[in-house]
Length: 336
Image 1: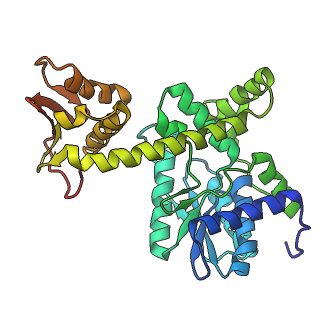
Image 2: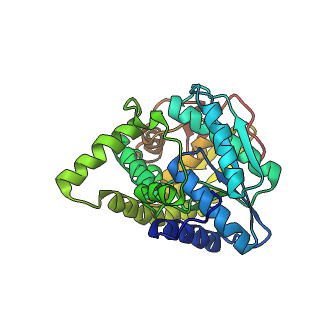
């Protein structure tokens, strides 16, 4: 990689996406950005684009490689990827070896371990953002999985370009473009064999569902799903903000409980009320579905002296004009 690759459309598109993402989220000269890189085509293309653009903008750029230890080959892949990134000019480049648990299944457990490692690296290095290589195709797959599971706005929102310290510049870039970037740049990405294993729901969506929809409904399905996520996110962000404003007026906290005021909840539109109930439940640390939220909402709209609800990690009781969410554990200060 001593010769600079010629500027092709794919290289120009990915570099432009990086610059625009930095401008949009306020990354400026002197900041440190970290690229999360697996060695695959998407994250490797992103890393190479960052390595090119960062010195021209006065931005420091490094990388973090999370090695999950699930496959025997991944340690070698991580070291090879680290060498490529250093050759590209990224510094520092760190490899984080993590242990993957079992909670939520293999995909969810690996994701949890990965993000914990990324957060630790960003905190240790005082990075402004962590850049992730999710593409438009990843966004479409996320929305399709959310539709299939009936997961509601949170899943249909898809992934945000900028969320906290995470930055996803490539959500408007197709996967074929990142592959072309690597080919045009003379980069040899790692092709993870697990990305072809149909035991994973996301792989089945990628290899079977979306191609079938393209055949039956015409081209542009991925773009349409990504556009749908953008539209839903705008509405959802507004409703979330409204619910957050109302939350403090409807909910009060004790050492081991939260109290919801019925008359105040009754005055709110259902989308706002349901968000408040979900936020209150999540204080107790469980995972709550729409069915749980609707069960609590029944105590607002259709209460006739029924017994308390027992939900994951919390008991829900209505007494008069109040609903109390109770736990046996002490709530953390500021948890509500």
